[in-house]
Image (cartoon, rainbow, N blue to C red; front, side, top):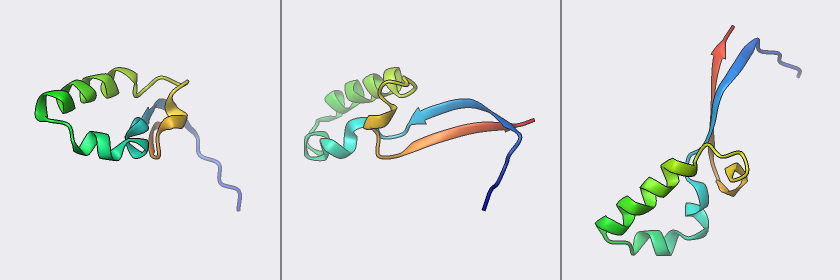
Length: 64
């Protein structure tokens, strides 16, 4: 099945980054450390060179 969609990519985001690889570490973080981790995640979640570390991605498209 070949599906063609006339759309442009606005953004490709790593939704969980390396979280899947370090779940026990994340689960043991206190609130301050988790907030710092989230700041890091939001700072790098759109970097193309790190998208592959994420178990899930979000592709945001706009129909033309």
